[in-house]
Image 1 (cartoon, one colour):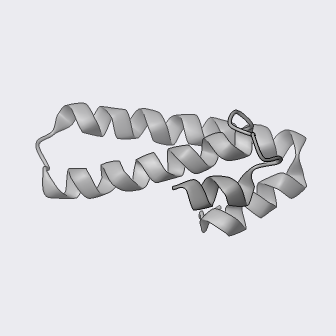
Image 2 (spheres, rainbow, N blue to C red; image 1 turned 90 degrees about the vertical axis):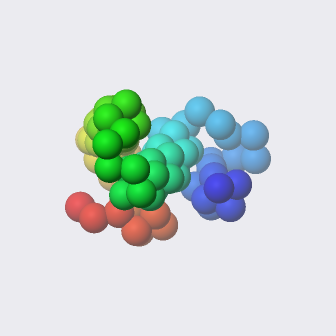
Length: 82
């Protein structure tokens, strides 16, 4: 997890930029997806997964609208489909 943050961080102590938030949400989404595949009836976690996916989508839309180069960079570094 720390490796992904360092890859996309703007500076050393960057914790709140859109890029870092997207990286953290991607990690959370991957973990929740694994959990839900194992425990199919866990509806509470599936709601959390849906919220995380929607939040990441909003942040990606923001980057696409305002910082196109950063958007392309984050898509390629995190291997996201778009």
